[in-house]
Length: 142
Image 1 (cartoon, one colour):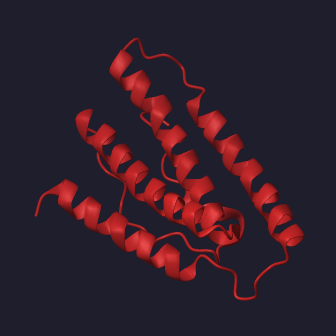
Image 2: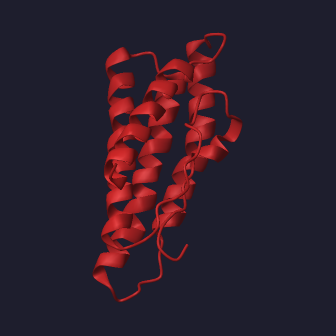
Image 3: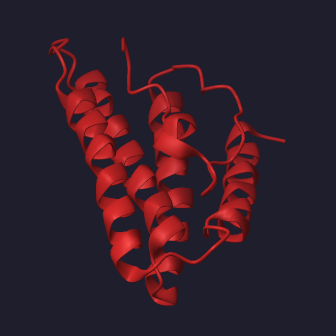
């Protein structure tokens, strides 16, 4: 089985796990969900912005990937928060698609540059405080 096929299957499994586990055990009030979303979104955005702030390598391809990988990871982190706190089923489905698509694109960029893929990790779920397990290495040389 090729690496890309394995990644696609792993991403699909992650989304299924997310879809099953992303909602809090007790539904939060809209105000509590909003507060939790905002509190967890800020660190995700800060990680993404810090990850995209690279030192140029003078290799356009490497610099592109070095900035896009944390950008894509930021989209994944925000999509997980939508699954965790959002209520709109259409947006939740889009969030699931974002997770799969962005994981595939991160893997494709790493492979295009001959970089190793990150080790397999459990799918992120709504039960993880602080989103620590949702982050992947933020890019080449980071």
